[in-house]
Image (cartoon, rainbow, N blue to C red):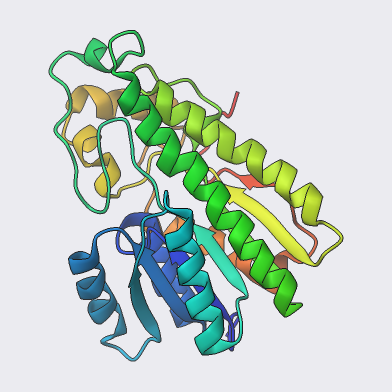
Length: 266
């Protein structure tokens, strides 16, 4: 098993890409801590994923609260004495997806255009998707350095960080920021045995894309952008994360991989 004896922390781990990654890592022998803001759904998710004997536990977490994240990492390291892999998968969309909840798409698409959107909505997306990831990365690196491990940090970005999507300026900017954060942080840690990479998925069949998949017009638009003519599956992104978490990618850092069905990154 590729991750036997490793310990992984996955933020946003109760659904979508985070959950698929947690399940994949556990299958490869890792002990996994999933963290998310929704405590009730988090406990349920951990119980469901652990039913087959997988070593998965849940800790409630607000990624925008640095003290909350500090407490999580301190607790994990205190109890297990290790921290090998961290996946920053917590995120929200312009449409309001967070922790398994999906808002209905706006009746008027221009409602979400930047000139119509409250700046508070913009800030909320940036706080979770970019600042939250930065906090996760810096605290993960501090603990990995203190432990002296060869660590892997994986940030979940998006194809939207390279392609402009009307009505999603905040989301696109946040994910573009995650890509550059990954590049810079990887350079800072390159000589310290900690690799930092990102994954920029295309349109994946998860709760975050539920409203898109319910709209024939949106589905047609996505298919026009996607040469493989289908939505990706969460397990396909989890497999990409497994590669970046394992020793198979030991010479890979500062990279963003785009499993996107052939969608151009611009």
